[in-house]
Length: 257
Length: 326
Ligand SMILES: Cc1cc2nc3c(=O)[nH]c(=O)nc-3n(C[C@H](O)[C@H](O)[C@H](O)COP(=O)(O)OP(=O)(O)OC[C@H]3O[C@@H](n4cnc5c(N)ncnc54)[C@H](O)[C@@H]3O)c2cc1C
Image 1 (cartoon, protein in one colour):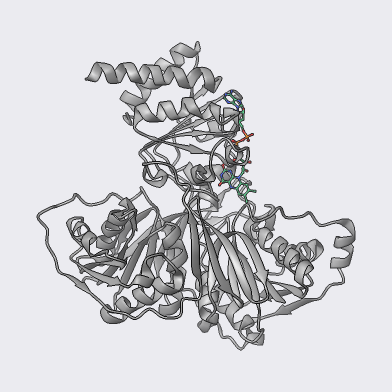
Image 2 (tube, protein in one colour):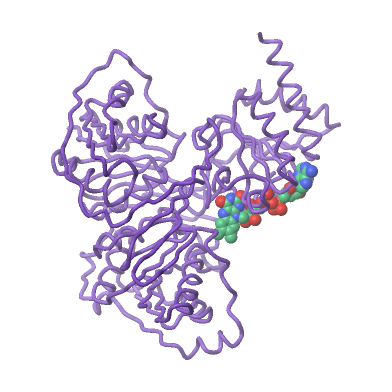
């Protein structure tokens, strides 16, 4: 099996967010593998261990993305590819990323491509399905189980809490939902091994892409914090009084009841 | 100079979802005076067309085929692309539902457009359509616009006010015939778990329980409170994982994203992944034993206390108020 994982380095949204000049301040912030992509890495490793093959983790990123790719290698992926757009792209969007990944994957004859169902920073969940469509292969999003038998694939998919059982076949792209698996932590030997695993670095040039080919279709005009809610009010007094006060606040002040 | 805009109507159990009416309202904004065309895809969906028109669509196109009885990205994209080819729209709006999330990137890829997902607001600035959408798990917002090509967006349920229903409105309803071929994915079985009645993403009042509810039994008082308030019960991942309730009730990044008028979080600590699904609610009440719980940081009103004491009291008081109103 020729397995590819699409991985994004993301800002850890557990962190406090501050904004200057319409941009998220990320100096010194913690960066992680997008949690939903971690499910993808884990699943890819389990599938390879079961039926054989090779897992290549691909990320469109910047110099620093190497760290998250090394983590995926330490978890057990075999190879990593960093498509470094640091010098070429000022502002990309989902079209940009999907176009680049598709260009990279188009001659790789992937059997299975795994991605996260959404990235916790941008939160749009577009890249997986876009890539599948551009490659001309089917995709299934938000999966919680996958069974592969030859080229036949059976999938369970989460649909707003309902679950769908789907039959399809390889080649295929899936996006991973929480519940699919429990991603492993890289072991110490895994971390040591990861240092020697192949990490290929490419730029747009290497994919015969020009900046215009991947120019974003959308433009972010501003980024801002949610409107400052008046600080929440923690009620006081005995519980019966608090309940009374809450009800009158909901009726008269908040007017929601 | 208005734009021609396609809005996909989505049905559930034979009824249009509210988000479809909200999408029409968004479509009207994108159209800037142009035509808004409702699109219905499925089996015997034409009967729903009039309601789309009553909520503001100028006309409706339907695509019906027995292969479209269940949503698949292959089937629905062929149907929707047939409409795109016929109408050559300049704008497209879907609801940001499971279906909308799954289908919209494929359509965007096919037409080479940008896609503004999960918008909570649509407005106009200097003649340009601008959208607002939450990013970073709801900790920030992005104001964004389409640079070129089709203006394409999915809208988060319960955020955009639908237009007033006007039963006197009429419009043309016509069918486009498409032969649906090559479905590469086949749905074999659907296990419906989504609870009775109220669709969580459309509920006006949500009473949500977390691990603090301690058991399946512990969700009963929450259900009672929800019932008096005409609301729905939701849950944290913690409560679902502990088997206190079904995953279909889960609210958050992995679960449903909700924007009710009133959200009462009971025994929920307020992890970022939970907040991502509810922090946009208009009014948030937190009931938690731990005064340091993070949920108090997003709550408008908080009660530090035992939910098993507070929730039944609330239910009783609301019952009294209701009785007095009759
Ligand atoms: C990738 C990823 C995605 C996730 N997606 C989601 C998601 O979509 N939704 C989600 O909810 N979580 C999600 N999580 C999990 C999330 O991080 C938290 O673990 C989860 O929300 C915790 O649930 P909880 O608040 O019910 O439990 P806890 O954190 O254990 O909190 C229980 C709370 O109950 C209070 N309590 C206990 N007893 C009482 C009582 N008698 N009365 C009042 N209060 C009481 C406690 O003080 C505590 O604050 C996700 C995690 C990951 C890694």
